Image (cartoon, rainbow, N blue to C red):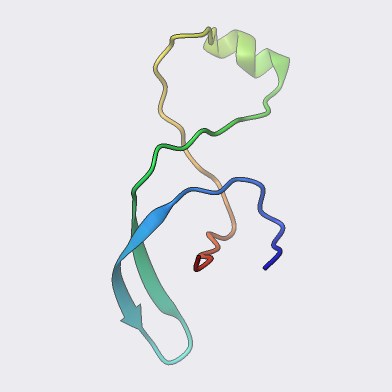
Length: 69
């Protein structure tokens, strides 16, 4: 199956709540994942990020696409 998302994180389904129109599926991430961010140089300088810094990644996305392997 092809899909437009570039990042893939392995996860295990932990619960399913099925509704009439929408359903909620919750996941636990089961494998380490690498992520990347593109930000303005102004933001980079304001954050003063450097290799080795610990940060919290806040994921802003419209969809999380589960793909069954």
